[in-house]
Image 1 (cartoon, helix red, strand yellow):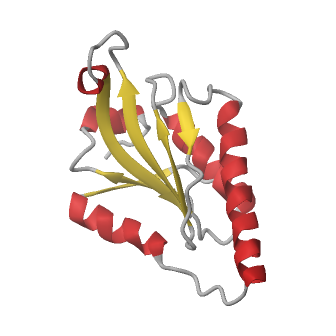
Image 2: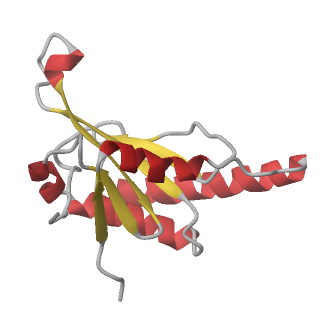
Length: 158
């Protein structure tokens, strides 16, 4: 049985401090080390994307970014109210845990929800609901940016 999903809501400055721990550059000495790391990164990204595709549509609902640095971080975005829910956070947590038994990886999500598809500008079409990341089974939310009603929609009671 999986542990209950844990949430931590932080002010923007504390959120950034905890989040940026993911950007500690790894000391990869050889090309073989770099290849091994890239293979692990692709494994993490693939596990997340595969898990998300079971319930949602790529592009319409989400994207998994393929940019990378040599650190235990990857990210994506969500774009529909359909995916802005506790099941999304749980899916990310479970996908990470399936490929990262040490809890090293951080998966960051930008929440840019399409609320007015017929709008003339992106600003009118998209509602920016903030950001959060999942690391080691915990969802950390930028509480300065994300309103309580949106945190509740993700399953967070704080």
